[in-house]
Image (tube, rainbow, N blue to C red):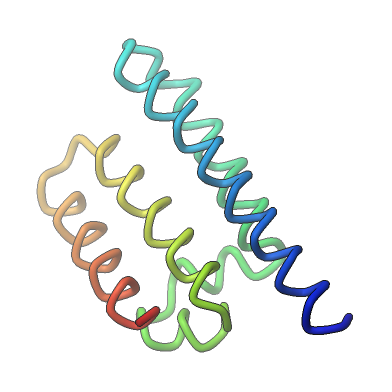
Length: 108
């Protein structure tokens, strides 16, 4: 894939994730937690593909290297922030927020 085609693909993917996040947040805020969680998992699958399980388990620096582009790293951080917003356990919520912050730093 040429560099411009890859960049176009990454931008389209980032826009799709952003649109999904808006829908997910709307569902969460309206009290439809199950649907919000389901759509969050779909967004993770769209962004991470077959590497999803691995990327969600490795440290932020390794995940950033595997994701490769700042757009994908930032999209992953946004998904983690939404997961944190949905999380009922305070310590897990903090871990997710910290990971998102680390990823945002790695994208710069």
